[in-house]
Image 1 (tube, rainbow, N blue to C red):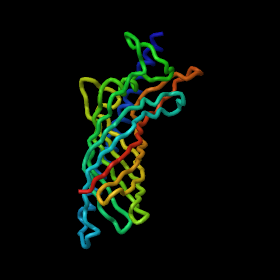
Image 2: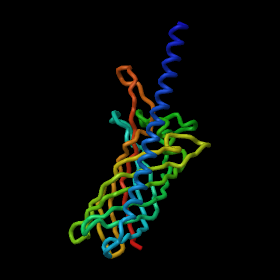
Image 3: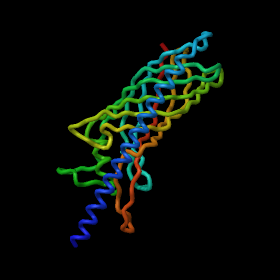
Image 4: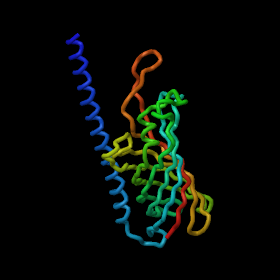
Length: 245
């Protein structure tokens, strides 16, 4: 029994060290991606403006989104939906008559939602597949995030309709007093959407963010009794309003 306990302790320690190394590697890759986004934006800024069509434009961007957690391999899992709000400044660089590169800095807040648990001690729930740590992250407090997108947009229909896609880096604010799965999280994902020009200065669009980074390191016990590692990603669908300065 002692030998088995020692083996279990050693195995757990090895798993912990491996998880720490993976987290460090992911953080390095995400930081490198953010540096790439900034450097790409800086490189574009070095191109001389020879015509009026090549000048930079600036935007004020407002986003209202429905944010969810996507739990892979658990079809019965709830989505933990909550409201997200974003406000920031965007930068647009035309790359020709029908194409433009967009980036910016957007400050956002993920508004806390009602917990799936209820009762005096919050031990009861109607959702059998709810994961306590994800429910805590969605319902315990508001979370603040910085979004840094790099988007390529193609304009059609006399430049009134735009189709866009690219990457979005997200840096979640640390919170030492209440550490959860989103605290100090760095993630990256695909951001795609469509936009329509309402007036000369106002565009309205719909955007979809699909996270690529795993935000939850844990697992569950399957019906067959075996542990299953989970992958959880952030997603949101957003109504975006852009105002050209």
